[in-house]
Image 1 (cartoon, rainbow, N blue to C red):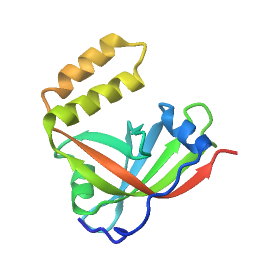
Image 2: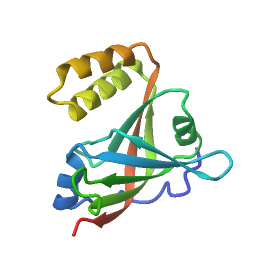
Image 3: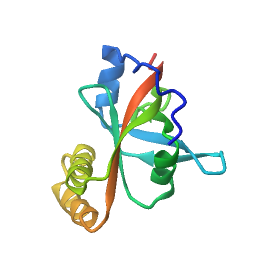
Image 4: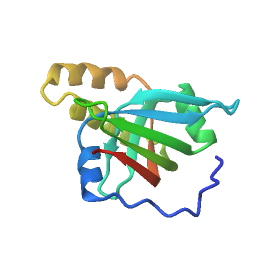
Length: 149
C-alpha cells in the first residue's frame, strides 16, 4: 500500500463536523485504480469515537482492492436532505480488517444504522452479508473540507 502521507497527523474534527458525520448520510468514496485513474462508489460508513471513518465491502470488489494497494482515499459525505451541505475528508487507510467476525459485525451495524426502522430489511441484508467474505477499512482523516454553511 502506498502511504505517501504516513507521517501526516490525523485531522481534527470540530463538533459541527463530527455531528454531521455521525448522521446516516451516504458517502462517496474515491479510490485510485491500478491505472492511476480515480474510482468512486457510494458507501455506508460510520464515524468512530476516535474520528476514524469505517467502511465495509464484499471482498473482491474493485474499490477494496484499490484501498489495499493504495490507501489514499477521499470521502465526500453529502447531507441526505440538502445536497449543498457536505463534508469532504482526505484520508489514509489506517487498518484493513479481514477478520470475519469483526467485518461481519461492522456491516451488520451499518445495516442497522441505515435502516433503523426496517428490521426486516436489516435481517435480509445481514443474512446475505453472512454468505460473503467482508472487509472493513478504518480511515484516518488527514484533511477535512467542510461545506456546511
